[in-house]
Image (cartoon, rainbow, N blue to C red; front, side, top):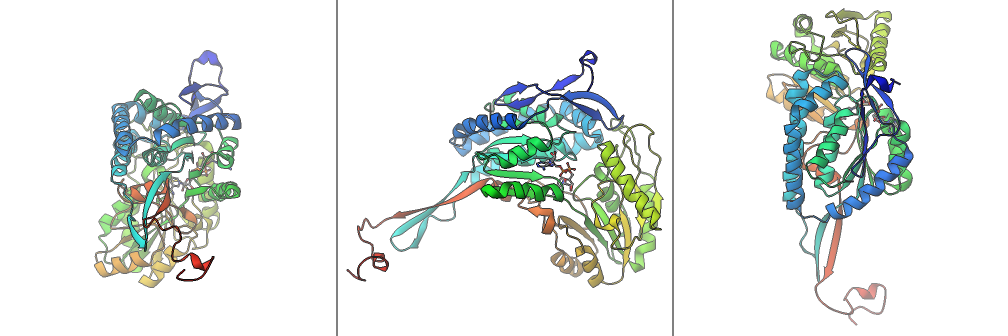
Amino acid sequence: MVSTAEKMTHYPMIIGGDRVTTGSEDVINPATGKVFATVALGTAADVDRAVTAAKAAQSEWGALSYGERSLALMKFADALEAHTEELANLESLNAGKTTKLTFNSDIPVSVDNVRYFASVVRRQEGIAGSEYLGGYTSFLRREPIGVVGAITPWNYPMMMAVWKIAPALAAGNAVVLKPAPNTPLTTIRFAEIALEAGLPAGLINIVTGSVEVGEAICSHPDIGMISFTGSTRTGKRIAELASPMIKRVTLELGGKAPFLVFADADIEAAAHGALIGAYTNSGQDCTAATRIYVQDEVYDAFLERFTELSKQVVVGDPFDAGTDIGPLSSQTQLNKVKGYVEEAKQQGVEVITCSEVPSEGFFFPPTILVDPPQDAPCVCDEIFGPVPTVKRFSTEEEAIQLANDTPYGLAASVWTLNVQCAMRVSAALQFGTIWVNDHLPLVSELPHGGFKQSGVGKDLSHYALEEYTIVKHVMIDITGDQRKDWHFVTFGKEGE
Ligand code: NAD
């Protein structure tokens, strides 16, 4: 704990529109390893208060028309956009992301996401509205779930919060969200800006803290849905906690994306794609290109060019416009990444360290692990650092087998100029997103979510909006008959 004499900003929780300052946890700048702020530390009792506030806010918010909710969210998006500079700088300070990334991606993408859900909710429509059974008209209602519990990770702190809050609110829910303990600041500011922009108190509640708060959210009887983004390990625990009350659950979990380079690919494009895929956000990306497989004929040429480019990646101060990648987000993450590389070295894997890093802070250089065994931990586990593996394959069949040889199924990419190969391989890969001749881009209109142990449910797109609604079938008798012709199956005789 830092002494209050140092006058660091203390960030509150946001509960029922109040700024709740109780408890204190240090917040560290990953680029220096030093404490620069403190944040309130919530408890299960805070979750309970947040749920009460959320229930009260939701009953009015959920009753608004789509147009009214949309307008309120559009105003909120404008307010967020007006705070771009503040939010981008804060995200860089707290998570170690470069300002190149936060100004040009994290914050504008988050604003776009709020605008997308504010607009797409207005075209919600039922698919029934007809006589599916003679004598009855049916229609479907898509209703809000009520209070949604959301839990987010540290790698894209604000964007992950927005991916949950925007569709949840558009669909008419209120939210109680717990950010990751080490990166809560932009999520707190997000909720404060929402209040300033006129969204009702209690609609977005942020309870900061760790496992106690997360588990209280998952177990709370008045929370109808848990929307979680984080590791597969925690996702399994979340599902366990949610199951006694059969809560709805969406889980956006880990990944270990394959990146398949075929012999006919544009090798220069593939090498640049691998650079972006493997190192964006210092490799702390669930869709990162971590397993690069290259066809024999072009293996040497690809590895040479990829290594050459990797050596040009500038690692350093996230606030310097010339920096390509910043530090890892915490000391724990740095230790984990170092551990995987050390283990690979001890197993005899060739390790190419590509650049120098600052001595202070949690920096780790782009590092290529050359041809490790397919069952090595560095190939199987999510490392979450700038550490791709590069391996060979001979045939299309082998490429597909190697790519699918993982419990994860979030994203993959295929590099080829042969359209038939691209079509065959993208159909055979068991991943939620497949890119052809690129890696990483996502967009508000199209879904993102995992196969296999990368999760259930979708973020982004109208599919995400549907996750935050519950479908109700309303069936109306249109005959007025007191005794229907099918009633004989339980009472009386047919035709009476
Ligand atoms: P994590 O699972 O350790 O933590 C995620 C969140 O869960 C944090 O807020 C944490 O405090 C909370 N938590 C931990 N234990 C809990 C428990 N028992 N009950 C309730 N909440 C609990 O993940 P992380 O290290 O913060 O984030 C990195 C992971 O997130 C990676 O695996 C990455 O692939 C994944 N991720 C996935 C996506 C996606 O879209 N699929 C996006 C971003 C990150």
